[in-house]
Length: 342
Image (cartoon, rainbow, N blue to C red; front, side, top):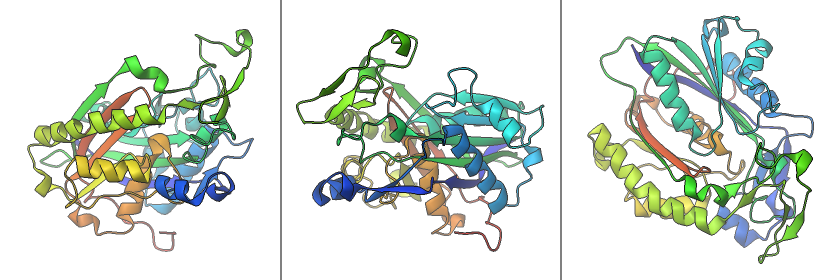
């Protein structure tokens, strides 16, 4: 039995925030973001996750009762304790025999989650997995931080992964990496057990670029993250191809973490992938963190013939700092039900 991606759906909050309200057109064009979906004040990551899962079940011929494991990738759990995945089991009306687990990863989280799903299925511990990503990053971004606020959007995705009796792997050639020495290049200083809110006064400051944030808000060193990406992603691509024993000419599509338009254009050049179909579009969503790769997958499978997507290169990179890549076969993705939105 090999793990296989069978369906991908998503949910974006109704509220939309336009970047023209925050930054000039030139900067917005460089980011590649015109507008972003923003979670309501009372809308949690768990709420978005439920909506994405319900969309998956309604858009595809999938029986939710066959779910035997839930994986939730989020850095924004509904509560400090407990984790959010078990609550999704209850809210989705699934059996109490369903396993559940949160994965606290960001930009590389989807690739790591695929590895976990593959391990559960191919060792016989699960057969059909509901893998959800959910991010409400804008709740942690200062409205006065124009280096962060215009980039990130909120949203959730749901991926159905099941074991299939086939002769070859559908999800393979994983490569992982971490550089924890640079953890503070993208982080929220207050909120964990090191700097607990009850013991840490909130301090609001402006940096040298006139971006304002408090120690309770997300901080990102954009230049450091850019350099990190240019340094680590090219060898990541080489190593995944080597692990898969294929070349760039064998690739049918590339779906990278949708960080921002400028960064991905440069990464495409640095990885010599100009001749391979390459997704680069966060115009109406912004950076969805762990959801950026599956959301892009949904866009791709809705727009091309999936029968030709045998070797798709996926990569994720960012907060942690961490990175990961793999090759997936999307040729077996199910067709959506007639009458659903595409």
